[in-house]
Length: 344
Image (cartoon, rainbow, N blue to C red; front, side):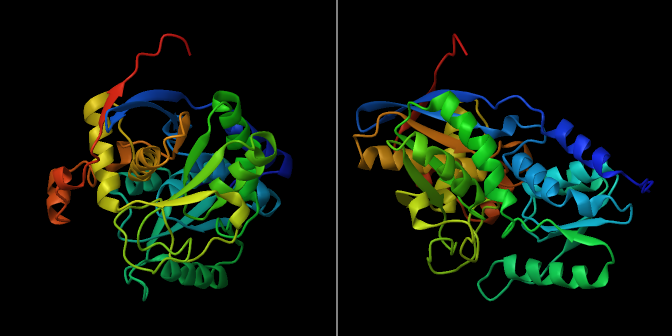
């Protein structure tokens, strides 16, 4: 049981500042051979964040934006999440000694669920999909019910809170530019759109030569595509982003869930790097774009998370069979190779 000790505002802010102190995540190059041509792709591995994903940055920004409302010891943080954001919020809530309710759905990774509950989070499952075959609308309806029912409930609202893109404008974007400002294309997965919007807001005035490529999956409505069920979590959404404008991207690449998963296996088998599903989608989009646009020579992929949370799903043979995914059928017609890093 949490002690619910009251926190002064200065304590809340100080705790969040300590949590936001971090080293930059690594950028790792890999070689790709496609159609007789060699490319080097740089992967910005956001799994290196404190709690394992790019959502660590988002979570700290969201909680900081409502810090004054968390001074009360009875405050309860509430958020709808497909996984990684919830894991980060659970850890933040634990350090702040505040209750956290994560509204989740059956697609939640069992590993991420265990991490959240171990940190003291309450998981509130939505079991019935919405009319589009997804769960976002149902999760948001449940959030509204909890806000009505729980005194002192605080919704961090990753879908509309401007703190979401702001943290990527002030953190992810500058870091990416320092590490790979010489790139000519950056590939970014979309869900709420906050990551792409924030990175774009930082890069546009400083690196106008950098093409920003949004990566999405079929069934997602972020860019107005027909809604439908999706296998992967952490990429795509059943509604348009409230953060993105057409100025935030130069092109959109839609990658099948199966291709993204196959790309994860190809990269792991060839390089030893274990990527999450959304990261696999970003890499697959990058490879296809390089084949299509040969003038792009220095791409960077923002990889949202690693594969540690997906041992029971995309890296599990029984799960793949249950989803009728034949990796050989969906793999990219390319070869990957690790590049030895001699000087970081």
